[in-house]
Length: 175
Image 1 (cartoon, rainbow, N blue to C red):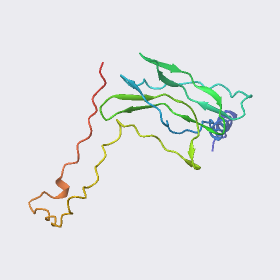
Image 2 (cartoon, rainbow, N blue to C red):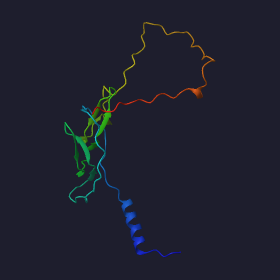
Image 3 (tube, rainbow, N blue to C red):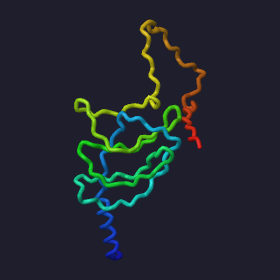
Image 4 (cartoon, helix red, strand yellow):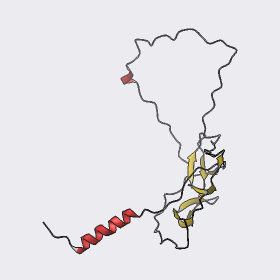
């Protein structure tokens, strides 16, 4: 059996230390009551960042990753930062969505105050353009039908030969 070299022991120790100290990240939450920004195309991929040492002056240090922000005409990179997270706050991550009409919508990342109603956390506000249409309640004027539903036809193909539903096709953004 080969003897371990000091370098392999040192590498194993550094690896264990690196795995044992995760990067503190902020508590995250939803974008409540915000209006998204219409964008013509999605942001580029994120950039690789070298994270500097934690500033000793922060009481509750968390690392907020860098992100792309829409500047009105083009995407602009905001570098990641160390932040001091207050107990009653959360960070709403940047979010890009495609609405049901095909347009792209962007919610920029930012710090938010925790909101509650009677002590219960509130959920996200749905976007009108991204939510499915409401189904109207059944009319009370017409009595419910008592006609039985006919059994499936014996000429119907077996369930294994039924084609799967088609995937939604999202058109590419305009140039």
